[in-house]
Length: 242
Ligand code: GLP
Image (cartoon, rainbow, N blue to C red; front, side):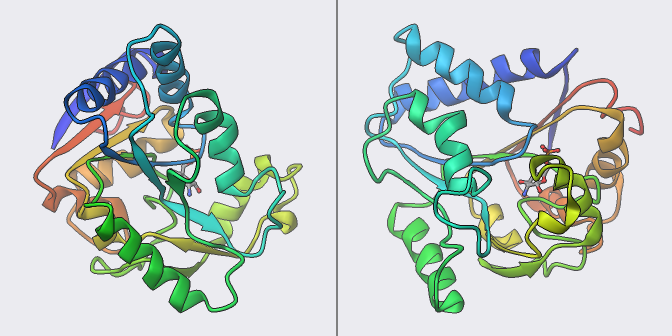
């Protein structure tokens, strides 16, 4: 695990964008793994800047989202497929249909999860996966207790995660969906390069457990210790417990 401490999110974002631009220059049809949440926003802004400067094209790239809320209407602004459209996809030149997420409106959820796993395999696997981390150490929506061998499936959100995400739902925790479809920890670990970005004191315990704790389903991000190519970019506040 490569740990990089930067002054703040913009500095980390430049390093992550460098990696993604280099990947796409080397392999224009690369497969990216995209995350939602606040943590990657600076990365997406930086990628848009590089795209506008003519440094990078996503025209041949593909991308897969980590997770999706169950049951949000197709036009809901917090549906992750819509969030990522606003934050990145609609601001660069991805081809139509090149970005997929788990189908949170599927009638047959197990079948939709299996189809999503297969779609990632058919695309050749994820070359570079962007990750954030929850205050309880979750990655994607793999909450504490998630199997380290898990694949895309439905998960119940913890109360804490719903509280953390209430800021996206009018600060009303009751409006936050109770269930999500999420790539599993084994799905995420299959990506060839994992890049986790995190800032703030509220993430310090999760970062400590991920980097220095025992590998445990109770701190799901700790499973990244078993991955051969992980880059963790944090600010001094998120690194405070290391
Ligand atoms: C969310 C997402 C995760 C994200 C995490 C942290 O619930 N499902 O993918 O990494 O929680 O979010 P944030 O970056 O907003 O702190």
